Length: 166
Ligand SMILES: Cc1cc2nc3c(=O)[nH]c(=O)nc-3n(C[C@H](O)[C@H](O)[C@H](O)COP(=O)(O)O)c2cc1C
Image (cartoon, rainbow, N blue to C red; front, side, top):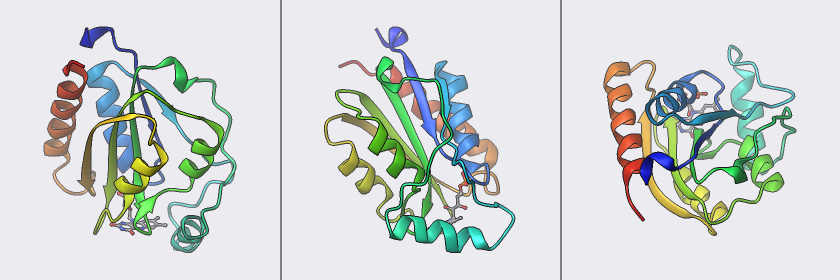
């Protein structure tokens, strides 16, 4: 059964860490990718990203997303990944959850962080109450620290989750 599941990885990434994890998952379990992008993206090379990004999260803003042509409701298993911003998931997901109602999906959560992942997973769980959360995994600066180990870790995790029955 596992192999017949149609799977998708939905992620946002400003500096490439979450993208690195997302692409490894997609490669391992043959999933499609939905990269959420802001119409007015932050500048990853400027200190202002902390001010603007932090403010977006604290004020629960819903910045406009670039349009995409994937319908998440066509998938059975969805991996959802975010960088940790101000202890939470990024504001692109505020917009996404406002636009897209996910229910009865099998979902696995992942996040990338530098210091602490804070409330990221508990906030995701609150926004996804009508779904089944199959697992969660956090990655500390995977591009800088133990890139190869993180690659192995995420691939093993994704494969195990997809092949779980029920
Ligand atoms: C606006 C902003 C807020 C952040 N807040 C946190 C935080 O609260 N805790 C933490 O551990 N890292 C925080 N970080 C660091 C990122 O979570 C970390 O660098 C992550 O790997 C970035 O993922 P990305 O490369 O996919 O964008 C923050 C980064 C930005 C830009």
